[in-house]
Image: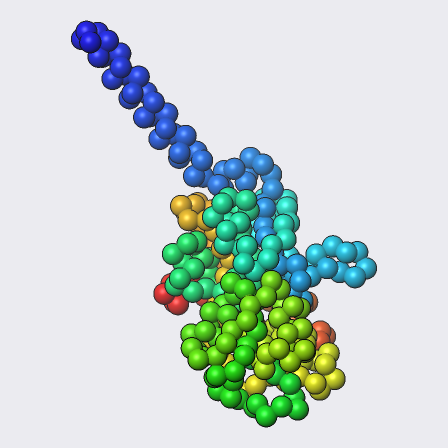
Length: 277
C-alpha cells in the first residue's frame, strides 16, 4: 500500500470514528429525542387500581401513576403518550427503548438498579399479605411455610421469597389473577402493596384481611433507561417542582385521600434514591 493510500485510509477511519462518536452521543440523549418528538412515552400498569386501571365509563386507563406521567410531561413541556405494560414487562420495555419513562408501582431494589436508573422516590408504602378473614392466620409469619401468590416480577414476589424462603411462591401476570388464586384457596396468602390490597380488603365485605406486619417498606420511584443522565436529571427536577408546588400531594389526595375507598395518607414525601442505596 502506498503512503498516500495509507493516509487516505487513516483519514477515512478517523472520520468514521468521529461520526460514530457523534451518532452515539445523539442517540444517547433521550431527552432531546423527547423534546423533538413533542411527547413523553410513559408506561403504567393497566389493572392496578388506583395506580392505573380502566375507567368503566370511558374505558381509558386512569389513575395516580397516569396523572403523575401527565404532570411530568407537562413539566418537560411535551404531551403525554401513555402506554400500558404488565409488571414483568416494565424493565424490558425501558431497557429496549420502547418507552421513555416507567411510572408503574416501580419499587426500588438494588437488583433493579443494576438494570435501570431510578428517580427520587415520590412515595413509600408497605408490602403486605392478605389472607381469608376466617382462617387461622393473623401475622405474616404464619405464612412462612405456606403458599403465597404475587405478580410475576414484582417486588412483593421478591420480598416474599426473601422473607420466607421455605414458602411456595406462585406468580401470576396481574393482581386480579393473583387474587383469584387466593379466592379459590390455591394459596393461603397474597403479597402486594398496601394501596393495591386495600381494594380487595374493603370490597370483600369482611372476607379478607391484612395480616399483621409487613414484608418490607418499599420506596417507589420512576424508571429511566441507563445512560440517560439528562433525562434522569430533568425528571428529578420535575418531581422536585411538583413536590414543592403541592401537586403531587394533590394527586395523591385525589386517588388515595379520605374521600376515596383507600384513605391512605402520603406519610413519606419525595426522597432522593441515594437514601436507599
